[in-house]
Amino acid sequence: MEPADGRVILFILIAFAVFALGRRFQTMVIMRQVWKQSARQVSARKAVANNAAKSMIGITLLAIFVIWLVLNLNRVM
Image (cartoon, rainbow, N blue to C red; front, side, top):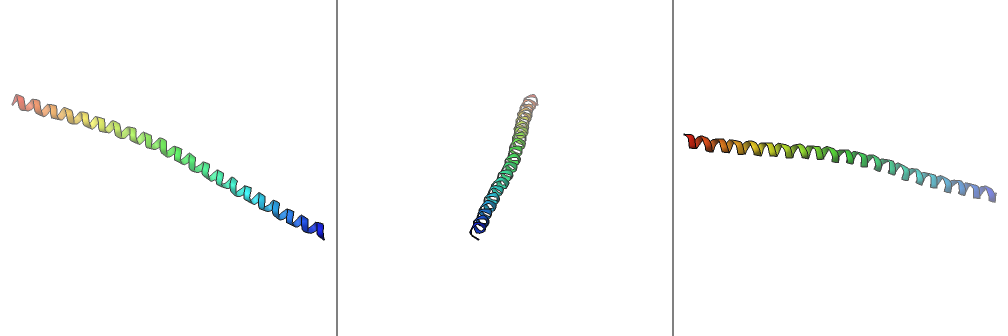
């Protein structure tokens, strides 16, 4: 009976090791998916930030033009 008990304990230890490795692999896969999503969000946020900056520059130039136009119209009148 002694060798069979040793095999059962060995089988349990191997099963536990495989389970632990499987959990680590699963965690690694999930973390990689999260990293990919984060990378996509960063690139999307960069594009949004660039578009916002371009819009602010355009609105600033438009405001400067309107102020210039009002000042020149006041001189003419």
